[in-house]
Length: 194
Image: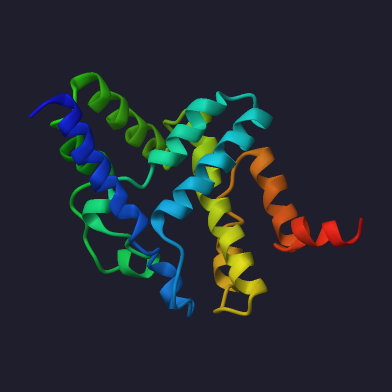
């Protein structure tokens, strides 16, 4: 197989994230939850914005956010309550190594490093970009919960409150407070007030 063939196979696998629902929302009563890919897109945008404000590398932070859930194509999106009972023996970094082992070596190494860097933000060994990406991951969940709440779908308070202790950057904390204050519809309702 050529390098192009291997890359296309990998991108088809990543495409699975467009069909994989975020499982935690099912517990909250959301019948048709967002997909992992939709989540990852906004994580990338948020990570970029946070990194600019924090003085970190926004391109790197956005890329971390974009790739952070790629291993879920193989292990699924295990909700928090499931993680209490499911013993996932293979960490995301190992899943990513398996996913990219047939890619061109330079590309494979880049992707492995992205997943490892984002995952390192869970511990003390992390980069500013990983901290921004991790905050973005948590904030995206909060924003999605606010959007579901605004449409009357599901019980969202628990999702919104659990994010408070998870966000560590000053920018992330400010965005979290703003997300609690500003209605998800504000951006388009403002047009009617002009």
